[in-house]
Length: 447
Image 1 (cartoon, rainbow, N blue to C red):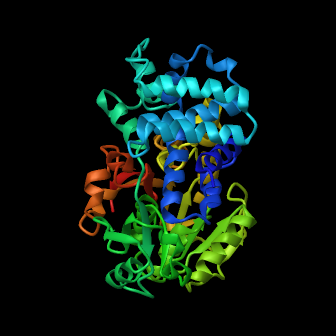
Image 2: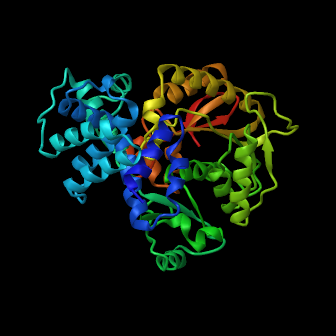
Image 3: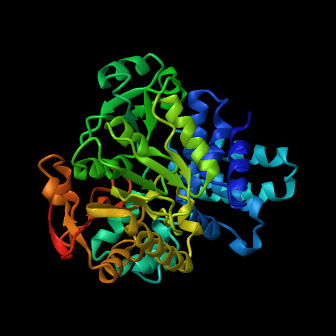
């Protein structure tokens, strides 16, 4: 099998709107080495596309607009191997890429790609000139220029470049361990027999970080010993556990799919009601809960923007809101090319509507927890500030109040009382969390 051809087919599907998480399932039948190679190549092309296009344009007699999309994809595949994959000999990067093109009868354009790649392999062209700092960041880290300019107003100085750099890095896979079934040490030992090497997470005592191997292909995964989840997502559920006064606290996990936080809460000893507007996503959630031996009976198809069919209020309502997911770009790099200015405005308005609706189902003295996997202010602080102005019965809680039980909160809570994991982006995805309590006085205070 020509792995470059397989990578081309995956990238071509993604240009049609598919997602990398789904497309990489095509690699399931490959051995670990080939799967790792193809995964790195596909993700690398996506992560570095703008930088690669700049090098291709400089090495070509044609402008990018004159190169058809299929030919450009192969040029990108070859260029990434030459520039970023030291373990691939230059001749193999060029020859195997051209061979894949010829297998599709792209004989005419394969000679063009061959010439471009050979020019790049010789170290030509040299340094790249940029019009300004924004363009440099856009090309160097392959983020659309408008997005760089947008975030430059929110992240000052070297913070923006550090953020873009980290979002282009490949994160470790992290797993939440079902301690009802197995201990961390026993799981580490068990999956090591299947070639998976793990280390304990420094923040959570029920999570592991996968350093080597494919955890989702182990018997332990099939038997429900763990769930693949980023620590930032686990953090959201942990916050809910911290504000819950007893195991009997009533919890609504609205917009709950794919279900990681409800799964966490069940393992923590709670019985949340989990709802989502998507029936198909709830089916996947039900399958995960069943696999892990957890209660799968409290799932409901509900539209969180509309009145809910509950007669009683909840002690805690959790909203992990629909969002741009720009805090997850390191795991899903295609996101950065698909976002628009209009997406942010639309999502922010939707988030406020949902949050406002759900606030009606929080009991007096109860909590409303808002979270997104976004690093953009319009989906985060702006939503909460507008909500608190419109709903004076709610007060923002300072999460540092719980730092004795969860020390990381002291590090990731900003001066405004918001949790922002982009502060430690290398250790988890970029999430935003706000904790509010329903009170008669409003304002901000420590719990």
